Length: 627
Image (cartoon, rainbow, N blue to C red; front, side, top):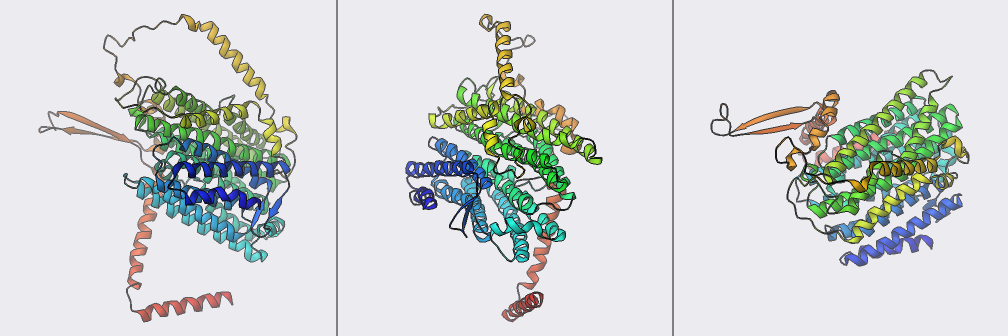
């Protein structure tokens, strides 16, 4: 009954997609219902089921339902004022939300994989919304291919578990999967880890993410980055860590390595981007890496029978999943507002928007501080918990693990510093200074502004008083150490916030803001103009040269004119970086697959009798294997 009432508004939205406001209102009701349903499930704390063999609600699923409901509600509220929302988006959006809900509530393999594949197909059509734009279809098909590879790996891992336990019900796996042999666990870990890692955009399987997320409309980008990639995290927690339990000791180390690599490379690639949404997409890779660092600590705790590591790692990962969903949705929605306001997302074409849209500027800068893990915002708390877990690895009796943990702490610290630098660049160039090009500024409706500010207020509230929400995670965490607040969070978030307020007030008094005079700018005797401002490339040049081994920077100068070699009329300067993973891994792999596919065409052009022989041979091989 409850499930039917929850799903009814989303089903109504599918049939009323031609009426934008009716469909969006129905979806908004659905999202609020999912948010309330998840909150009630988490509040009760015990596993409850409805339609026993089909739908299952646990505390962990409730947490991710809260994330889904919150981000969906804000994105749909924002969509009422978003102009670039085509009918196709309104048609596919409820199906996308329903499929993610099915994944989180699935009680068996069949419901889960149906929801997972539906999520892939519907999000593919949402990404192709602007198919007339350059590279959108290419980006969409790269996303589809990677998603299908992810689905096949997940299905294979599930089939291995089901074959050994003689059941495809997840409730059975919770009780008996930990008893699987070590070799079986290793195989399952490899298959499911790869499958869920691809969907989460973990390096080196990240190539689809910075292509697909920017191509979609802003509300869809918010949902994909805020919720969809978190379902891979949900799969890792539920099926690999909680269900399988202890496994081979190298898996936790591999999770930590993948997290460190994803977080550092994600922020490094983000620094080189000129497109605002693509920059934010790379930061999603960075934050998935930070979440994996927490899960790596949890996995080590499970294998080493260390309850504190389990508690800190899981709480850090879950809290950062929520925090990232909030501030990344805030930033993507703000980026969509910038695009609608100015008509472009090219950072080097923007500037001075704080004077034309101050509310969006405030929301973006607040989100930038949260994602940079600056107090008193929520990103600081969850990243501190991750630091707390990694620092705890550096202790007596851990041997080489101490050195490994020290390296991870240094990587996470560098990641945070580079993230702050990246958002100083994005916020400063886009919102401060002067406009670099004359672009028409469209007024923004309140329905686009208030969701951004509401999410910004949430980042501040959760950064100042996170303790109540952390205590709500106690039913999820198996060691029940969450109640030991000082052990997990030995910092006074309210004290930090209070000190920051005092410092800001003192600085304001000492700087005598009221006495500030506006005077002409000095530019060495020349007339100041927009070309004297920092560009995205010039701001990050020092980073590009420092990490040249990773970026492989290149630049060319082209001479133009009839006598270009000696007397060029103009010079065209081009600079860029080499996408290492694409050039040295994916392109050779693509060429190999293409050649194999081309060779396979030789056996596809034969007579029907040959095809029947292939079929007969395949059936014979399958029967022999099953026998």
